[in-house]
Image 1 (cartoon, one colour):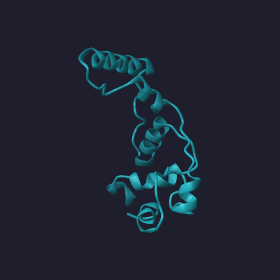
Image 2 (tube, helix red, strand yellow):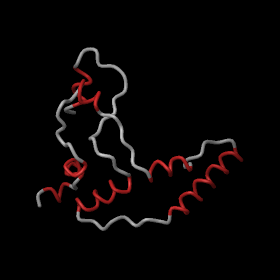
Image 3 (cartoon, one colour):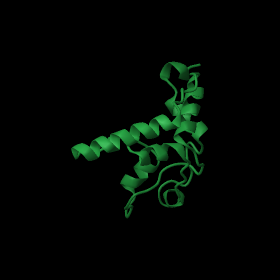
Image 4 (cartoon, helix red, strand yellow):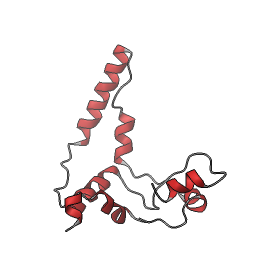
Length: 119
């Protein structure tokens, strides 16, 4: 563990929840596309959005009918389709002033498969 994790453990007075990340908005879809590009893989196939919404609706109906928790909801589908920006200023101010990987593209090098890192 390094960086903000070590700071959070060792620094006195650190409390609460920190948003960890860079300053760039992104979507799950963009992340997966960039991950594939980093490793030289084909871009992931995308099912039509209506299929996911319909599947989530079916899961929610099933959960309501049987009194269980839905494993997939329409809210979860929405989360994966929009950009999210979190305020990382507190993390930078209290834990880590400079990010080792300040952008998605630079950080994706950590997710490169080991046999591909030597290339």
